[in-house]
Length: 250
View 1: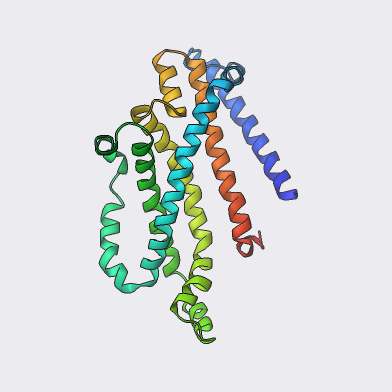
View 2: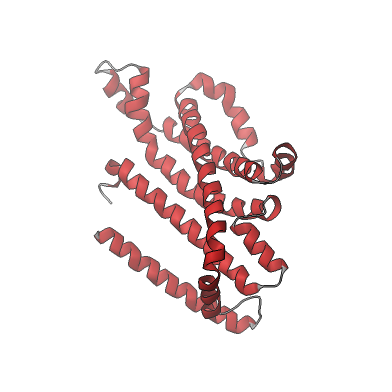
């Protein structure tokens, strides 16, 4: 409970600093495109019933994408990290495609999957997949040989070593990749929803901007920021339950 209290105070302090900076920027710019915090938060409260369905759609898209990227990327990364033969064959293919900006494939996905959930989820999943894959591979490669040999000396086979040593040893790094991917996923969500969506927070923000409704636009921005914070905290909470040993000394 003490940790949660400290974190809550940290969020309150950070929010206060951001509100002050927002107020100063609004006064300095003196533009309707940058409303004051009072106006922005008031519009957020006013638009909350309208924002809620868009928030739900965006949450479904981003959570589905992260889960798909995790379920596919983490096991493949762990296998590449522990199998030298697989890494020699598939490693160059992964690292050849990893630096390519996946957002350029959105037009292709729109043609293949159409406008809507499928193309948006596919794009976010593609980006998250590579981030988790590369991190899981590096984490599996960093498992000490002493840890593997100590379990092998007890009669464990390769599968038992993989399940009881490699997976737990790589889990903290995989969760780190998940936290980073959550921020990336929300950013890509906004980009894709402005182009390939007719619902969602990205669409809401872009539509309000097009109608020159800057109060509504900032309400959508605040909702998207809230989505990012909730995703980050959810991953932190799950990591605390799954990787208790890694957090014991924190």
